[in-house]
Image (cartoon, rainbow, N blue to C red; front, side, top):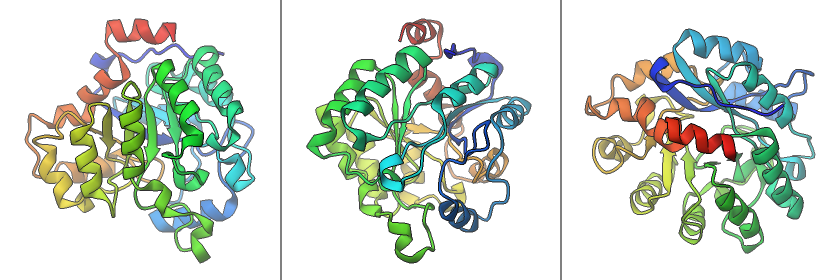
Amino acid sequence: MRYECGVDPEAIEAIDMHVHLEVDTCGHRALPDEFFDASAAYFRTTDRTPSIDRIAELYREAAMAAVVFTVDATTALGHRPNSIDDLVAGCQRHRDVLMPFGSVDPRQGRAAVVEARRQAEELGVRGFKFHPSVQAFDPSEETFRPLWAELEDIGLPTVFHTGQNGMGAGLPGGGGIKLKHSNPLLLDEVAADHPGLTIIMAHPSVPWQEEANSIATHKANVFIDLSGWSPRYFPESLVRLASTVLAEKLLFGTDFPLITPEKWLRNFAELPIKDEVRPLILKENAVALLGLGAAGAAAGSRS
């Protein structure tokens, strides 16, 4: 099964750049049970595992499209990931509203490089998702440069978790997850050395928001998605810069199913952001980044 994007930007009102598929069609969950339970308590959510079909239904009803992914943390967690092939097949069934991002385990070395190429060329994923804290790696380390070079050559965007972490929150030792791996400054080095690699720093990067603001302002290939936090809790500096230097660098994202689009949008409407900037954040920046125009769609079909 190969994904062919069918999202029509004119038919939707927004693009959610950050949606998790937490269970595959065989009932396998993306993370060990202790992390599921801890994150559910942290985010105070009940339905942690909607199916790909249910996700599509919700976003279609809301006149939105969504980027959907899972995370391969096999080495760090000793837990096999959800099937990327299964995720792609589900997104293909709902190609009018869903776009799949792939994921590989950077700690698997050459195998991760080969798998990234397979996911891009054979499956047609539209980007890749990484979670340095959950996957337990420092993205700035030399050992991972072959993977970043391969992704730069492939030409698809990458999403990296940054900042605070709901995974393992409240567990003794945070479940062994180290927050330092999600410091956005580690991505500054990657962005500088791989200028053709588009990097999306996921979430307001608390407690390193000033660093994230600086990197996104300085590096043309770096963006910020606004998922994982209710907008009412966004750092003041992020809100202030949203209407100026970061207006074309910010992307709507929820972290669904942990936060619903309805809740996020309701709180976003209360922020002091210029009216002319809101459409950029909600859709137009993502349309450009994902190449959803006619030319971009044609390029994506050749990847």
